[in-house]
Image 1 (cartoon, one colour):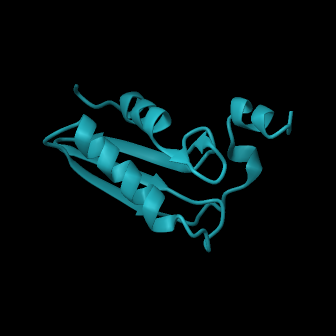
Image 2: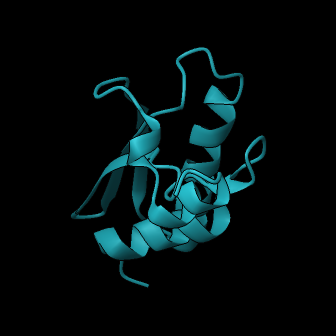
Length: 101
């Protein structure tokens, strides 16, 4: 499969679930930017808090599923803290699951 930004987001949506919340990291609003270039995929993501105990785990999962799905592509996942994550960044579906709608 040739990666596109939408395809990359969809792979992450289907395969990387926050184990504490049971919702995928895309709908949680944790994936900020996806860039696809010649042989390379870059993802900027955040966490709900800088002290999140899953920091290394979630970023590693994103990297691993993208390497599996898009073999031959270099994958770089960066944790970023700006802008700061807020619940408003969640998808409508995620907010509904939390009773925020």
